[in-house]
Length: 254
Image 1 (cartoon, rainbow, N blue to C red):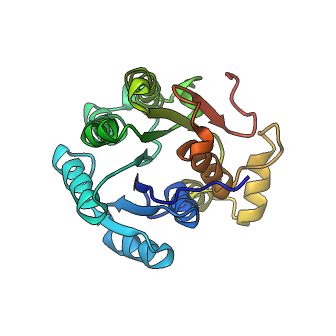
Image 2 (cartoon, rainbow, N blue to C red; image 1 turned 120 degrees about the horizontal axis):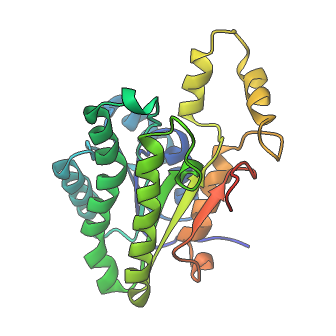
């Protein structure tokens, strides 16, 4: 089955590396015009040069940054048909050690950015009677672990947001879904490997991490991007309000 996004225009946050960059590649290869948003200008420009995506430098942890990112995408393309809320890094620790500042920063980047960008893109999607919103969360949203705050909490809120928007968007052709990340090779996992003091090669470290996954390996960013592409395409036209685990079977919750 050939998946096509010809004629579609996508905005992907956290799009300069990792899963965001993989999704940008997949969407562009399927025919979409794609804008990628990130804070680091150098990484952003390198990603844009590699993929042909339109780079947008913005801090979407603020309302002003969300507005700027949306306005830049509309200026470039005329509209946003597909919104992928992907920005965010894992923040976790012992509950009593997580400060108000860390809680607020996590909610601003992972929850309020998704709320604000969806609210900005929504009127155009509703008018055209077509829209796709994909919220990238993680499997802690369904099965929050000990010391999983604040990420597990903000991601669980993102799952609730997904269902609210799906129910409101369905009559207008706006489909809203969440993809829950398990252990998938991305920039975050590269950093975790670098922080491991044992000096294992990346391949050996990946193999070790994969032993905790029922499929016996960690996932590839391209596999995650293919799932997002399906949901963004017409082939996923009868799927909305779902929170799909992309985790090789690792989550204890379906």
